Amino acid sequence: MSAIIVITTTETQDEAKQIARTLVEARLAACVQVVGPITSIYRWEGAVEEAAEFLCLVKTRADLFDQVEAAIRDRHSYDVPEIVAVPIERGSEPYLDWLNQCCTRGSND
Image 1 (tube, rainbow, N blue to C red):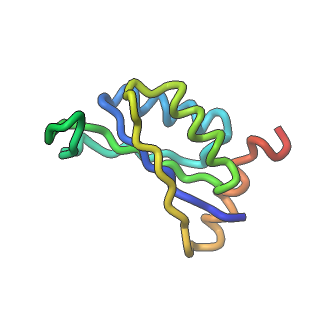
Image 2 (cartoon, rainbow, N blue to C red; image 1 turned 90 degrees about the vertical axis):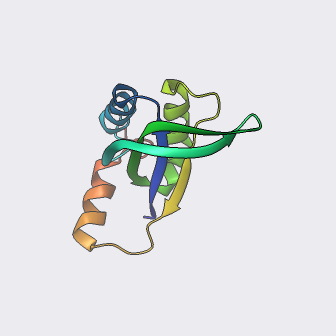
C-alpha cells in the first residue's frame, strides 16, 4: 500500500470542512486536517493576488487519487483548484495500517 497526502486549498472553512467530511465519509481518506486561515500569494490572470485560504491535508492511498481528485473537483468553488499529491515516504507502521484500513473505497465497497 502506497500512502499519499493530497493538498488542496479552499476559500472558506465551510467549504474545506465539506470536502473533508465527504472524503472521510466516503472512505476515500482516513483523515483530513483543515488548517487556517493561511495567506496565499499567487499569480492569477496576469496579476499577483493575495487571499486568505484554508488548507486541507488529505491522508489517503495512492491508488485512490483519481477518486479523491474527482470528489474534490465536484465540491470545489475554484475554477482551477490546487489538487496535488505528495508521497508518504515513511511513517509509523501502526499509523499507515490504520490509514489503509480506513480507506476502503474502490477495494471492497
